[in-house]
Image (tube, rainbow, N blue to C red; front, side, top):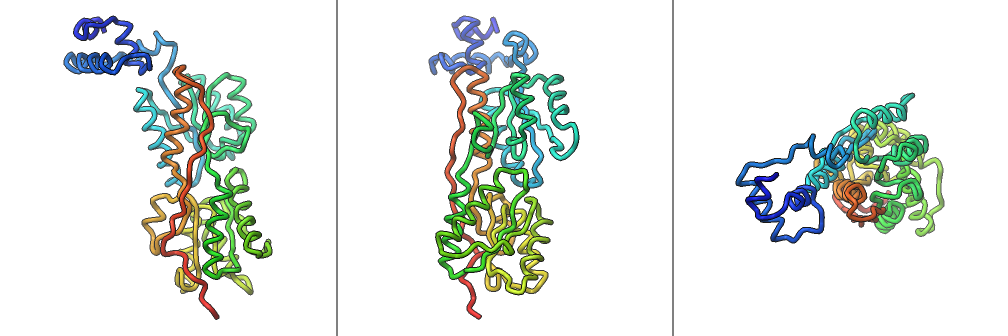
Amino acid sequence: MEDVAAAAGVSMKTVSRVFNREPNVREATRRRVEEAAKRLNYLPNTSARSLAANRSYLVALLYDNPSSNYIMEVIDGVLDACRSADYNLMLRPVDYAGAGHVEAVGQVIAQYRPDGLVLTPPLTDDGALLERLRHLGVRYAGLSAKPGNVRIGAVLDERRAVAEMLAHVVALGHRRIGHITGHRDHGARAWRLAGYRDGLRRAGIAYDPALVVEGRHTFESGVAGARRLLDLAHPPSAIFAANDDTAAGVIFEASERGLRVPDDLSVFGFDDTPLSRQIWPGLSTVRQPSREMGRIAAEQLLREIRGTGTGRVVRVPYQLQLRRSIGPRRRA
């Protein structure tokens, strides 16, 4: 560090500020220090840096979500934020349904001392886990948490998005629209179900509980849910699946029965994961920018950790992605 300071004509404190990404450094000075470090092939000693700052420079991402597509998008976003702040990222699966998961997270914190955590659903709304984190004084951010459960993170108006998608489907002539819900422990389940009911109410369509079946945000639950709905005496002409993995299961089951999508059955989902563009027909869905949400949540968390600002919950925009999986209701 002394060599870099001398080569750049600045103090060691300035070099430290540059490599810690502190904001009170002029851009010209920052470039000069970075160019000097590159010439000298200098990299900060991570262990020494951690000791000097009393930080681990580590963020842990905790997850227990059956949709690998969703999790990979979030990981990429959190990693983007960590790279920009010279932080490392640790991935930690948590068995939410298993006994002792709160204690397991406590052990991770004790062993690795992360400076903060990023939580994904359903962990964002796990009261016992959140209470333990507050007791330990660990900073955390959450994605798609219920109001009041997290102070830092990213959310999307899922209820409004679903209601808008329902309005589009109703405009195509569909009146019997089924819904396969998400996992009971996810906050998104309630929001998306509420949006489904909002859309029906605004269209003057009575809510029929027989058209709503339980799902778990998995392909398999989409297959099982589609079987139940399509076995009804009066099956729906369209099905809203709580996420894209579930919707893919619906399309699979429809194909198994010889039904054509969207000629015989319209299908739409939520998230706009890569899967929605890889299956045929292309899946109509609500674009939830999962990568962007992961990046924003981590950035807000790192602001607090580094003392450069106060983190907050950021509301991100959604977009309807209308593809080939929905079409006009075919008249009998």
